[in-house]
Amino acid sequence: MKHYAIRDWPEGERPRERLLHEGPRRLTPAELLAIILRTGARGQSAVDLARALLREWEGLAGLESAEPQALAETRGLGPAKIAQVKAALELGRRLLAEVERAARPRIASSQDVLELMAPRLRGLQRERCEVILLNGGNEVVALETLSEGSLTESPVYPRDILQRANRHHAAAVILVHNHPSGHPQPSAGDRTLTEELVLAGELLRIPLLDHVIIGRRDHFSFADRGLIEEYRRRPRRPA
Image 1 (cartoon, rainbow, N blue to C red):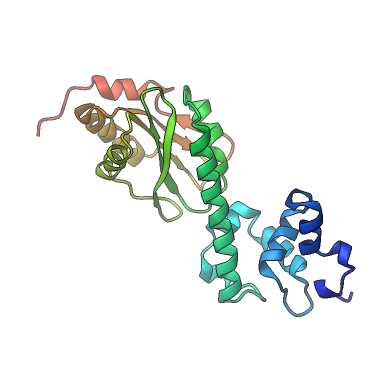
Image 2: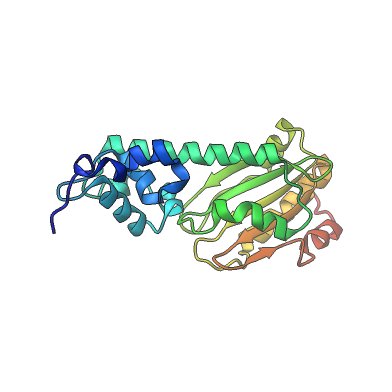
């Protein structure tokens, strides 16, 4: 089967022209990505290359988390195209963060946390830890990425979380991270970190309201399981 370059397509079928005349919402993710890529590879149009990338990385979330070195193994992707794709995805992520800040959602339950954070964390190939910073009315004042680690761990330090809370004048925090394995059950390290954050938050009057772990299909909430309150009631360890 012969593949034609997009410039050889009828004008009404070219993604860039369609975007300008019909609007971006009418285009598929592959067509939008093709506009960023501009050109394909030998025997492939930009749309063909975009479809192959989305298929290989299981959508935009996988593509966003892919390392540049891994992307470079795809035929037709050089440093310039990889940079263009990464820049476009980062702009989208920042736009989402701006919209979320403007909307100021209120967090009243772990389900609210899940609805806010699952689109950002579910399906990532690396463990990413984020903190939700809240005002006195439990409205979100900021979302910040604390760390992004290997397949199984993402190092987080209570000091860093509380510094960010002070920077945004937050009244409370919620910790959220994903498990790339898909299973949300907390590790021993997750439990230790949560207890340390509860203690530090109580001392500095910036309470940890919850720690939510997002898996492939479900989630684990320390608050829902009564663990946050249990950690608060435990006797303080001697210094």
